[in-house]
Image 1 (tube, rainbow, N blue to C red):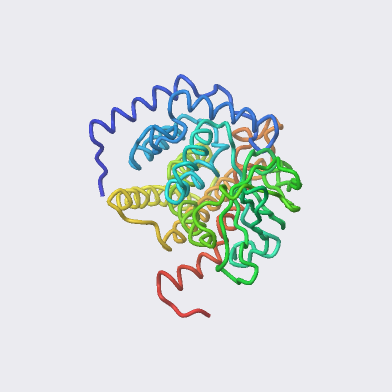
Image 2 (image 1 turned 90 degrees about the vertical axis):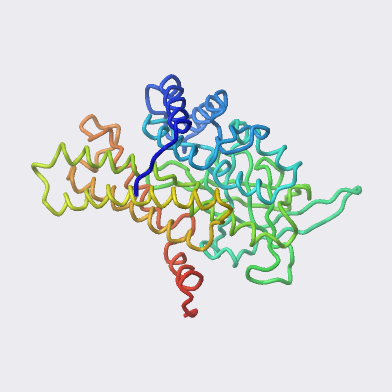
Length: 390
């Protein structure tokens, strides 16, 4: 397969490259999982918006640039090539944003999308619960509809856990049981709520590196306007599955992210090749080929979507592929570096400023977040291959 870009696409690539060359910070920003780093990443989101790069595929009236998915892939390739900061707003722009486009009212789109694209409102994802991790149908947190002074509200109660970005974020989107007599995937609703409301308590969860990348959210009779319901009451499962498709299938992890890692791994191997085995060389080659294969598959998916198709259960295949590829690449890098791979960025002798250790620790979470790979294999078996439920 040979990809050939049009003159317009090549010109778009050059525009992206030139803008990033002028605006990407000279030094890496602190971790976005720290308070100071989070705010610096928010400032970067606002810098992106100043050039209309906040979310290039969105319509201009919602703060986007009106690009198609191929242009988005080109943007991502240039973004990672330039070494630009990670997107602190990824839960919003890559997950909730596309979901709002599909299920939101005109009022909701106008209210939430522009500040999302501008970095003015950063979103957390709050689906998982202590007894409902990858199995979202087991959600127990409830939302009770009430009317006060002629206005409709939902009263939220329960606990969410592993809520990404929740420590410093402004808003969160979650799934709640609005029908108390329902079970499993029935009777769930998708609700948007600000994280500074009375009755909300946020408890940070520290990652392997010590930074609070996740949090528990405790909701004690939290009152949210009913207009924050996305879609219809009881439609939460259908909407969540669409969001999960964006998360696993296309938007959250662009191929450029893994191509960049594969290239860095190749560069690392070339520096150390005299001291590593042929088996490691094979792993490096396989990583590079897999990253390219994932890229081509994503271009195929984007083309299919642009032709009117949808992302289905096959998104689970993508999620397993990129999460295990990421883990393999970082594990290979650690074996190439040897004992020094355990040095953190604060140590002068750390190879590549300790980036491989940080990436390795994060890659270990890949087979768990966005739905554990064990659950994804069940989905593939039942919905893609048509195998009977075990």
